[in-house]
Length: 40
Image (tube, rainbow, N blue to C red):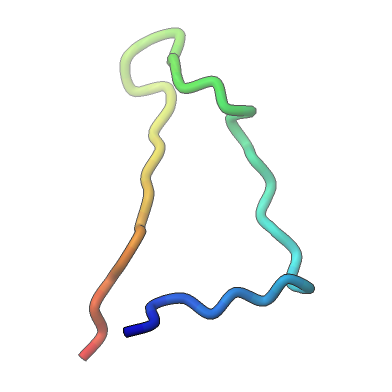
């Protein structure tokens, strides 16, 4: 089963948090990761 076909020529989205996953206060930074979503 193959779940992802990547297009290496497509632009990648910018890293808007610069890998800084500590927020200065509660509710200031939300991150998520959708690794797999079934679409039957």
